[in-house]
Length: 115
Image (tube, rainbow, N blue to C red; front, top):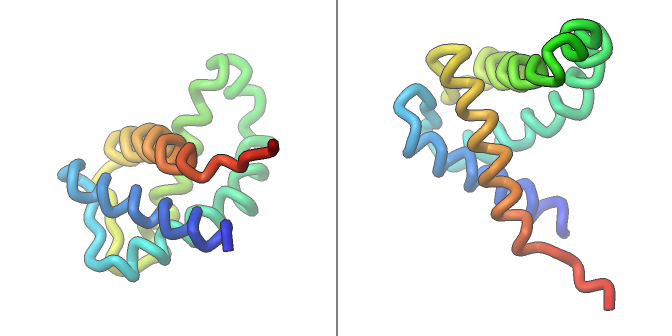
């Protein structure tokens, strides 16, 4: 149940950022849910491979190259999902930064009480 709620919160974050950023387009709420699911799958499967292959440049740039990897994952999702588009890599970098911040804020409302 918690996984579905997190997926819906991620979709909400995608919709909010599509409204704010002029270079990001999502045509429906269903597309936003698909975008959230595909980004989760790509981050689970593709991102670790990219991080391993680009480890030397990531070390040299003190981790800043991870922003480029996140942008490439978003651009890959752009290619895979009809109805979702990102205009450039710079918009994708900004989208990934803002998406991470917004997801952190939204997921903070789901904290488990361990007591």
